[in-house]
Image (tube, rainbow, N blue to C red; front, side):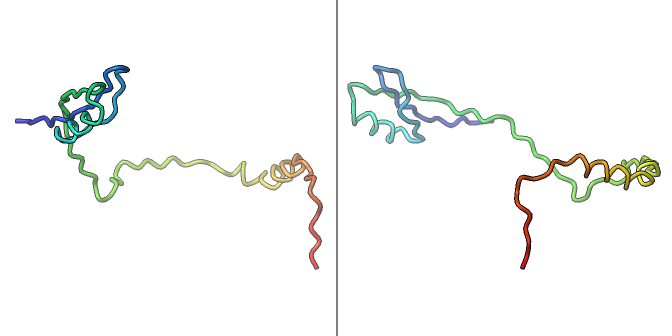
Amino acid sequence: MYKSEDYFSVIETKTGRKICDCADEQDALMMVSFDPGNRTITRNNFLMGQVVDIEIPKQLPTNEVVHIPIDTTPYRENQEEWMVDKIKKLNESDLQEFKGE
């Protein structure tokens, strides 16, 4: 059987604004005592959600790996030509060229 945990909210009565949440009722009563005419306590139930245990495998399964061969011949044959085209398309920098000692 699941037992809920109670916590207490201290509320400002004039505005309805929550001032704080307290795990202990005595702490909430102390907060009310600072301004008893303008503060009140509400009791709330904390209901924890369902707990799910997850077991992570120590090693990823390798029997599901699929290898798809890719023919890279066209890329390798034209690689230099494509790189030259890309370099030519780069804009010149406005920075001054560095000349070492």
